[in-house]
Length: 282
Image (cartoon, one colour):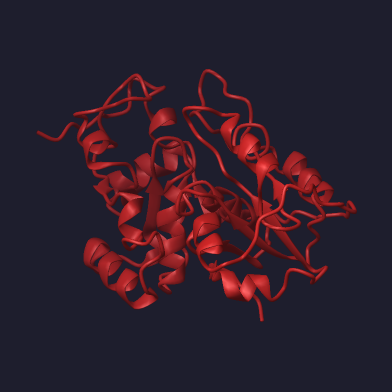
């Protein structure tokens, strides 16, 4: 059986000794970019590798990009191979933020044609709550070859977002907090507000009070209420920099609403061009 959206700790624990399975720790903090690596070195799931959001899952920021530009796919494919991920591996990714950061690697692998990747539901906290152990032992990794098969249909450019919204063929969902979406609070980016026409669904709404994803049925109901009759293939997600937006995309996929896309540059790229519109909610 392949896992393509979510996996529970019990099912992952049963496969810990399976050489065809690879676990990747994606813990990260925007406030302290070394925190995830520090936490990993002091305790992680057995055999897990570590992926750094800035260094591994993003490219260098330039004057026209957002805060987390997409990495070069050839470079990323080399890293995946160095982590022991082949084209047949079952990959499981996790973090300590409900999937807010691990969703980025989940999405990137899908962009490279790798469907067998799942987010650990509830993250490292739920793993420990189920009584499973952590280790500080670094894994012994045998590098392999990962061949990327990029699919550009998984993401949109700023121009494609502009065109889709203008033609009313695109439904855009912003995963940021209501305060940031409304433009009442902006702790990170130099301009507050949201892309005109975007709807707001904070990614945290995908989780219950225990930090677990809502049922597929409930997620489907909530997203259909938001997008109406618009097909999932005409839905795109954005956030501040193309990271937490992957959470909404994952939730839709888990709900069976397949084919939505990511505006990878997101708000931090959008505002680089002063000719693009900015909306504020009173």
